[in-house]
Image (cartoon, rainbow, N blue to C red; front, side):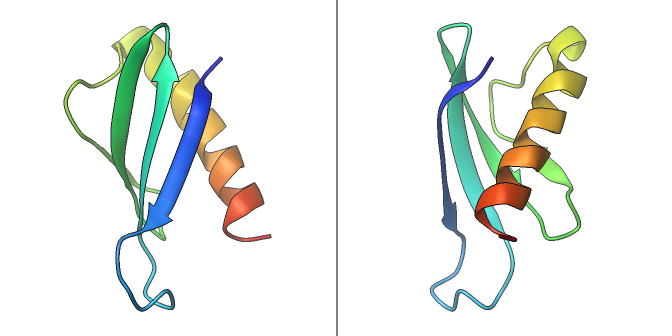
Length: 69
């Protein structure tokens, strides 16, 4: 389970979609950019491939809840 999820808009004009996000998972900090299309661009380090699908799903759910509420 990921913890300490945070996000913020990429642009001052909040009508322009795009958000940066960060969270902790298994004591490592991960971050990236979440695009309006749902595409995620990971910053280094990237999650292990075995965890990628689960983390991507959790991020989508959190973004839908917080951004598209």
